[in-house]
Length: 295
Ligand SMILES: Cc1cc2nc3c(=O)[nH]c(=O)nc-3n(C[C@H](O)[C@H](O)[C@H](O)COP(=O)(O)OP(=O)(O)OC[C@H]3O[C@@H](n4cnc5c(N)ncnc54)[C@H](O)[C@@H]3O)c2cc1C
Image 1 (cartoon, rainbow, N blue to C red):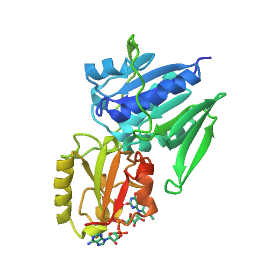
Image 2 (image 1 turned 135 degrees about the vertical axis):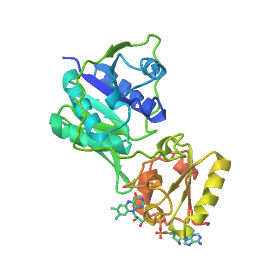
Image 3 (image 1 turned 90 degrees about the horizontal axis):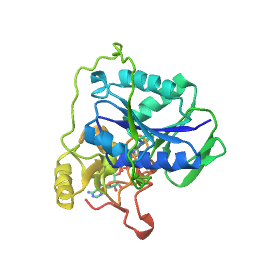
């Protein structure tokens, strides 16, 4: 029996740093399981995106349908579940964004598999997959063994480096699946954040603000600072809940998990729930990760 490891890539995000990390994790795990690494591309990917993905896997399955052009949680969930039923994978890897987190658990339920998220590392042990993630606000790590298949795992952004591309590109196979629009959830409006040129999860430098800034206005100064540094802006939950900045800026346990090289937290107390979101900031031991209360 060949173990199939699927790495999911979405046409609407394309092949960004997080997707490359997922592909890197999938490639290594498939090698350990002596299995096959399949990329499942969902949405309307560009030809460049498909060609790029083909350099990292054994086969590319493309689920291409206008109904999947943009993320619609119910339609995408049903399409992905159908695709996974057809491909019968042992492991399905996803990114660590809120779309994937939402879908992974529901797919796990539908396919009667197992799941865990926020994976920092993956390892095969026999037919089980060992998934290590951080707990207690990043103060400890725990390893789960997933035995039930398929195992759904969402991988923390930037926890994995991309692997070297292969010399020979993989075969590209269009999936023939009937995609139906799920009418139970109607998308009324879609608003894109203007700063979302690159995702917070992929940022190398982040400047973050907390409640101590006292209102929305100081965040404009933070944005100028971030622009000068080529950084992204983020915030604590207190600042987001106060409505000073968009909810999408929130870093932490219930926000985004980031792994930058440098994280500047300004007027932020460093509550464990906030720190959990930056547990993987690089080089913490060399004090590159700075928690500061200087407003
Ligand atoms: C289940 C759960 C999940 C949570 N998830 C998250 C999460 O994902 N992300 C998150 O951030 N929080 C989360 N929280 C909330 C978290 O516990 C804290 O309440 C929150 O992080 C506090 O935000 P803060 O540091 O901005 O505010 P505060 O704790 O109020 O800290 C403000 C800091 O600013 C300093 N300050 C004040 N004035 C100035 C000044 N003029 N100059 C400089 N410094 C100043 C203060 O000394 C203080 O240290 C969660 C809580 C729970 C219970």
